[in-house]
Image 1: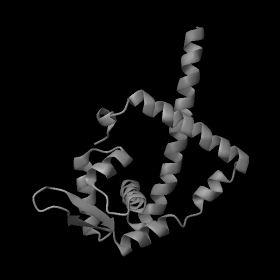
Image 2 (image 1 turned 180 degrees about the horizontal axis):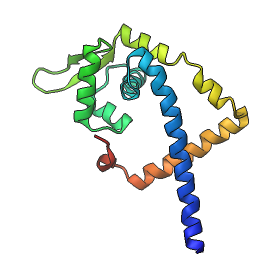
Image 3 (image 1 turned 90 degrees about the horizontal axis):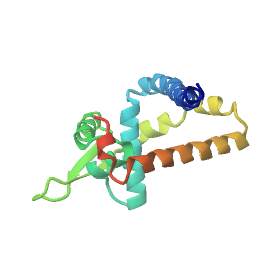
Image 4 (image 1 turned 60 degrees about the vertical axis):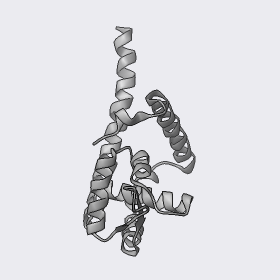
Length: 161
């Protein structure tokens, strides 16, 4: 019976984490729907902006894929949709290779800024003191790092479609 209790403890933590993520995601989807973008599209914009800021250039599909844990073909489809929405632009890097550089347009930056001008995260997370938020961040970072270590250096098998 003790084995079941110990399994239950870890499973209960998993369920609580999943429920919390689902509730926060629901709030986020409601807000993003008003902006006309999905959480996945916003994650893609975030990846492009992050890569552009850190590397000083546009992002590649492979880089975005790694950052948001999605397969390259899924990212390519997402980029095509974002391009139709005029939130990103693609530029071919080499005429001989199938490489593109992806950057966020001014309209994409506006959507990005509006998406971060929300108050629900502040309201939800302010239910914890600053010290507790810092501890939560540290705990989540430890769990995230442990999961990534379990996955190994090339977690391609884990990438979602």
